[in-house]
Image (cartoon, rainbow, N blue to C red; front, side, top):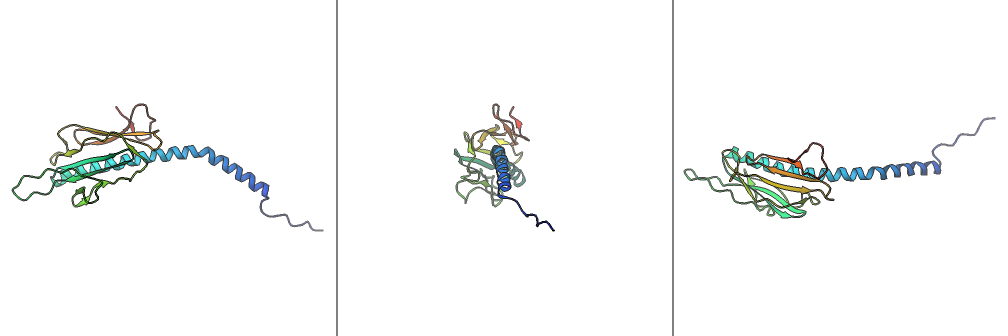
Length: 190
């Protein structure tokens, strides 16, 4: 006599055990994923701010026009943008670069294109004290008058901070402030 065909598939109990194990693993991994996203939000915002600053500085030297960078707002409603001086008519001295209002999408023009990070681009990232506007000199790309600027961005839950420092020569870098957790690829502030 031949044996009956063995059953195929899983029993309900086996399926429930597998689902319970997957649920426990997901609960264990959730804080790590949350922390990962928090770090990357603040790092992404800092990278975008530095990109605006670096592009503005490069355009100032390339086009031989002063470029003004301004950051406005507070809390999680902030933006940063750059505005180049208008091209002078032949024989006239160059104009002064006016401040950019990055909340106005018609402003912040450099080389005929908008150079700004809009309000809400990083809605969960908060900005600390907003620095005074800075102007990049068209000759050397240095800040006029000479001096640096600093701004700190804070992650959604406040665990991570990234400080953006712009030195007198107009070079921007990011660092993690003392007392805040280190982030890979970002040096501690001096």
